[in-house]
Length: 330
Image (cartoon, helix red, strand yellow):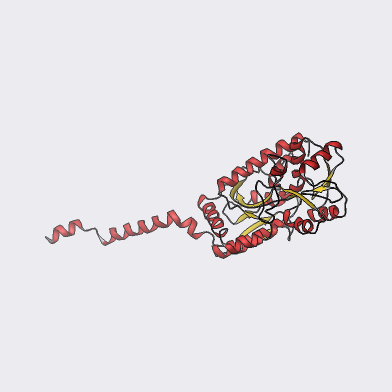
C-alpha cells in the first residue's frame, strides 16, 4: 500500500520545479504593465512654458504621475512649430519613458515642409487624443459684418483685401483661414505675427479685420464687445459659449479646424505600455476635477483610443496637404 502511494506522489524536487515554473509564468503575462513605470517619465512639449499646450501638459502630467506612482517631467523644447521636440521623441528609446504632447500643428507641418527629420506616422506610437480646443472666427467691430454670409459677401466684393491675422504661418489660426477661404471660394489676405498673443493685440488695435484665435483667449474681448464672434471652429458647439453656432452651422458646411493636444511616443513602444497609458488617461479624464480644470482652459475632453488618435493624425495630414497645396502655401 505504501509503495503504491510513493509511486503516484511526485517528489518534493519535482513539485518545487512545477511551482517555480508556474510562478515564473504568471508575471510574464502581466509584468510589463504592472512594472511600468519604474522611473520618471519625460513629456516633451514643442512650445515655451505658459502656452495652451504647455498648460494641458502640466495638468495631465501631474495627475498621470500621481496615478502611475512616478513623476512626469514636462520638458519644453520650443521651436520650428514642434519639429524640434518631435524629432527628439522620434529618435528616443521606445520604452515609454519619453513621450510627446503634440498639438494640431503636428499634422500641418507635413504640408508645409518638403522634408521632415522624421515620418509623422511611422516614427511615432499614438496613445490618445486628449482634448480639443475650439478656435473662434471673430471680426473687428469696425467691419460692417455680423454673420458668416455677410463676411463671405464682403470678401467676394474685395478679393484679397479683407485681411485676417494669425500667430504665424502653419499655425491653426492660419490654416483655419486657408480652409475657410477654400471652402467658400474666396481670397483673404493673410497677416502672420510672431505668436497668437501678438496677433490678438494687433486685431484689437484694428490692424486687420478677422481672425481665428482660441476661444478661451477671445471670450473676454467678445463679451466686452471689442470683437464680434461669428462661429466656433469645432464640429460641435463649445460649452464655454453654447449659444454660439459652429462655423459649419453658420454658413460654411464641412468646416472644422480645431486646436487639439494629444499624447504619443516613439514607434515600437510595447503594446502593454501603450495600453496602460491609454487606459490611465481615459480613467483620469472622467474625474470631475480633471474635467473642470481642463474645461476652464477652453478644452473639450476627448480621451480617445490609440487607434482613434492614429486615424485623426492620418486624416488631418491628408486634409492639410490637400488644402495647403491647392492654395500653394509653403
